[in-house]
Image 1 (tube, rainbow, N blue to C red):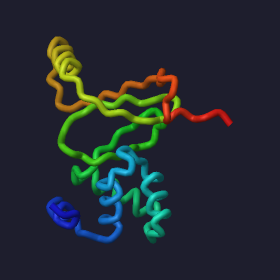
Image 2 (cartoon, rainbow, N blue to C red):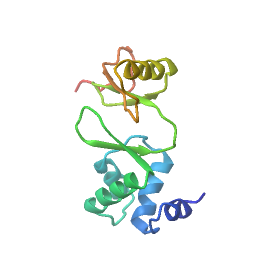
Image 3 (spheres, helix red, strand yellow):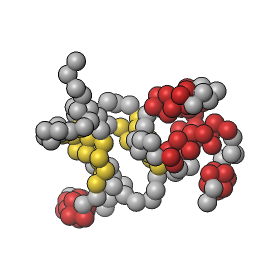
Image 4 (cartoon, rainbow, N blue to C red):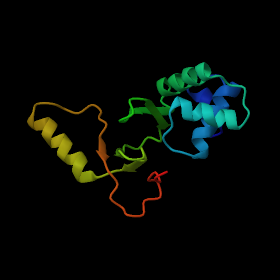
Length: 144
C-alpha cells in the first residue's frame, strides 16, 4: 500500500505535510520520535512545515491508528508507527535510547495477575527504566 493509499484508507487527505511526516516514520531513521524530533528532520530537509502542523498531524495519525504514542521518562509524547504487533519498551535513563521487546511469559503473567485481581486487560503498555551496564555502549554520552 502506498503512503497516499494508507492515508486515504484512514479517511485523511494526502496533504504534503501528512505525506512528509508519514515518510519520516516509514524511513525508520529513528523508531521513536517526539514532535520536536520530527520537526527537526523536516527543517533539515528544508520543508516548509511548522511545528504546530507537526503536532496536529501527529495527533491525527494517532487518532487514525497510524501512530502509537508513549510517554517515557522525559514526560514528552513519543510516537512510533503502529505496525499492529504489541511490544514493550526498555528505556535507558542515561541516554534515553529505547529498546523494544516482546516476552510471552511477561504477557501471560500480566494477564494472570489481572485475572487474580478480578480484571480482564483491555490494553496495556509496559516501560522498564534502566541504566545501561555495557562497558562500550555506543549510545552513552561521552564526557566533555
